[in-house]
Length: 596
Image (cartoon, rainbow, N blue to C red; front, top):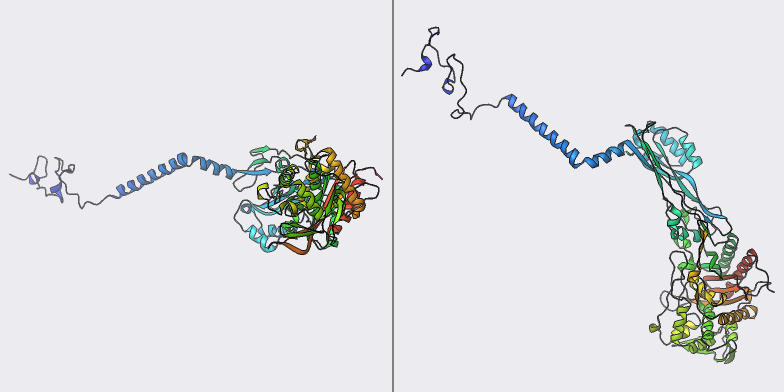
């Protein structure tokens, strides 16, 4: 059969048609045009991919990627992107609340807050680094190296100084340099310098209380910070007339304390002198009104400067009348006599045959006079002489069960309720832990450790007609006086309290406490000398806790003073002069009329 590919058709030129290259793969139509390839039988294994197909493929893949990315940002990261955008176009600044002030009982400012500035850098908008570095060195006292390092950071907010005074900040900002950002804040100021620094305490750079009453009443003092939202341009500068939103801060509460600055100053000066004269390691004083527990003064020595914390020692920031515990020594004898009289076991004139030596377990106990003979003593005489051996006999009459009961009544080993952080409740044995020496040793103030604040509260049972009051610093808040009477607790009868107070008057008038006398006043007091315990066990040789506790006037006590000197080579006589000086100043300041 003839091959159609070589057959002339009507209209042909007469020339035979030559098969075109590749005609075996195509069937031409009648006009000689190639027909559609036979896709079922065509051999495409070596057919090249056209450039148009490749381009279309890449465009398609790119489109899919764009759609996927857009979906991811809109669906999966929408919230995050909104936050980033918001942060990029707005600046959020804190408006710090003014921390409440502390006042003494007479309205004198002990600590207050004043406006100041934190200084930060937004290095992204600094246009002249050299001028900014020069300004930081000149006004903030930065070293050139530190200033250069800060300016070269890549940050929109880097603090370079905190608590800068308003005057200094204004001088710096007057330079008009872009990139220097002020943040208004407050700082604590102390009009009386170091006075009552351990009581007041300190705050951190963010005005949070760290120690003392600043910590204890932090929630009342802080207030609530406010804020400002301001819109920025792309170059991080603020937009005039841009978005602006503000929440004003709420200032903290002012607090009125029971402290009297005049009594506080007298206590600090007398204590510093006593510590130096006695060569003691530390000293403490607490002055109270035993009728209501108000703390008129409290301090420890050495002390510190709250405006210069870089040089302060941690131990000097402690208010040791609260945070430390000691063996109280003979001051404790007043409480033991109170228990014995309250139980009806003895009276002030009950007599004892007191030997020169008494065993407390395996230890021999003697009196300070080192006598070698037995004496007949009344309970009053035992107190007047501060006889250890005599007090052991009184303690034996009380017995272990009643002794433990009265320790609880006096609040010994329990928190006093004072509004101050870090109270030390000491070391007090439970009744089932007593051994053969426990009652004897505790009768004259050894084998027991208590904080001065506990002793202060316990002795108020004697100075306040048998009722213990809660020692406290806070007098008023938001103009309202605070009621502390809920902590009042009767420990002994009023009659017992009167008898013990009268015996303590004898101690000061003609006994071991004569150096604690205050001209013109009846003063009841008790001396105390306790050996300091050694870390390796036993007691240190020639190292004592010298103390003096007392109140006045005897029949209507309005002031109670407790002085302790820790680590002195002297006995209680070292604490008595400081006691007398502080008591005299307190009575005079409060206008208490003489009783003699």
